[in-house]
Amino acid sequence: MNEKDIRETMEQIYLPEQVKEEMTMRIQERLESKAGKAKKRGKRAAAVAVAALAVCILGIPAQAMVRSLVEARMERIPKEEIQAVSDMVQSQDAEADTFSRPYSEKERARMRELRQAYENGTFPEREIVQLENAKEAAAGTLRYDQTAGMFYLPDRQLTDEELLEIIDFQTRTDYALTQNEAAKEAREAFVQEQAQLAEQVEAVGGISEEEAVKIAESCMKAELGAEAEGKDDVDVLLVDTCETDRAYETDMIYVVSFENVNDRSTYTCEIDVANGSVLGAREHRP
Image 1 (cartoon, helix red, strand yellow):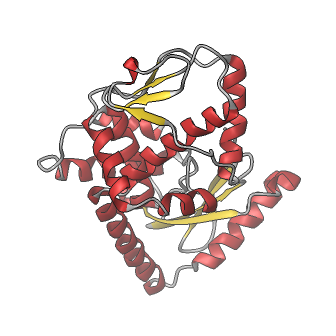
Image 2 (cartoon, helix red, strand yellow):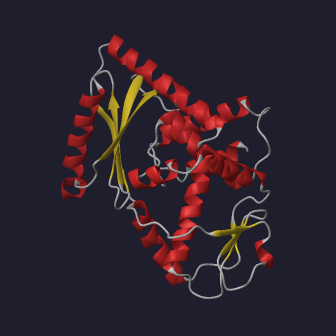
């Protein structure tokens, strides 16, 4: 996986540009340090792994998957099954999962609605049928080719159950890739790095994380007014500005993000650790 692939993945994650650039460089460094150990994997697997590493290294909200009900569902999957899914995805040569036909406009619209329902706890009754050579299976049924990485869709409108089966399968494969050894090591490194930065903040008499959240929340309410309602999911990240490509007049900042889990809108605010001043803020809507 090269830097271009990493940057393409990072473009799908909203963050202040300088923080995003830092993530790109640090993820690249970690992947290069493991290049000798890593086995060949398709671009899709690598892209998902980058997203996982991004979450682990810099604490970015995993907006695409991590909701309490979904997370609990994933954690109930036996470890052996998770490993098997990870091995399957990494063994595929395809750059991404493919489909035997495009979704219809109706299916696309319903898929968007069902993704939200899935995050709120609406799960399929069954798992998608998986075969080593799904092309030879009977037509008219939804199935997944494990070797080719292809979804075979029936020549009719997909049912809600079938769409949920696709969503569930994609979530499982993404989750499996976040559980590999590289992601676990990155998660441990992130925890250590954040703890070290927190110690530095305390040593220089900087503002606390709680104070940063209050400042960011006040900024959000002042700027957005009623639209700030619902942005209750809070994530806080400490960033060493020396490792970014943007010139700051401070050594460390808090990046405070508020997310509305229903419409996935976010509000991100940068706070100077030294004096609590707001360095930048922006709302993002998907």
